[in-house]
Length: 178
Image (cartoon, rainbow, N blue to C red; front, top):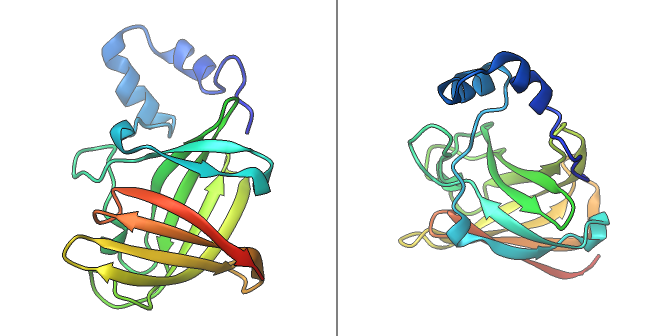
């Protein structure tokens, strides 16, 4: 997860870009598109169990604009989005959320979600799965208790991923050792 002094994609961009207006289309061609980040809704999180220490979670903005994402409640079953980024003092990880089950949108209590954290290169750092509990449908508040891996292996610590305002920002709590 440690960041190199020069990002891996920089060399390819330097070769292909000679004007600022070329950055966006070339980034898309290289599969490194820009994302809308809602830094005003950043939250702290503890990634010590992954060996990453304290981190800041920066959510990808819920937006119809390019670079934004859907509300996690409005994902179709089987759909996954990049929901945010974890930033530490020397690196970053990506947070993906996938709706595994349910019917229609918005999601309902009992629908299953998977959360996974990866490096920029796609190496998986964490994967947890659990059921959604909608607490306040009017305000888009709820949580997913990540209790097991996607293969059904119980997690050592249950993580509760809280979603606020239709998942535009999140919080997390570890609730115990299994």
